[in-house]
Length: 83
Image (cartoon, rainbow, N blue to C red; front, side, top):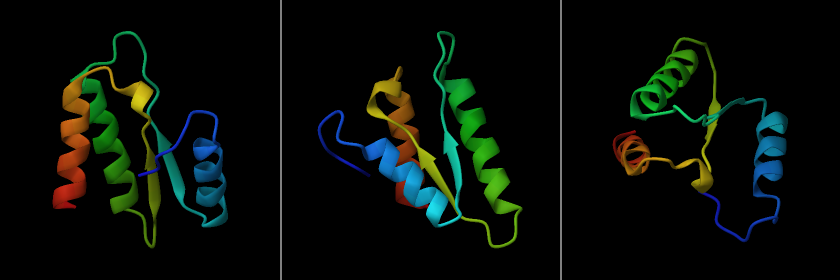
């Protein structure tokens, strides 16, 4: 979790660190009709992608301005809590 002011370069540094570490980057693109079902499908695709690759590590980047429903945060919290 990265916390800071807008324009501080958190996204850029995260992308750079992901590239240097040779991790896969998954970033959610929110559109107008993006609801909980689509969000969960994106999480499912991301987790299956990293689960079935040998020695695969990944970064899931999700910004506060991408929260269109509170349940998105609840799902992320569950993932972080349970693992």
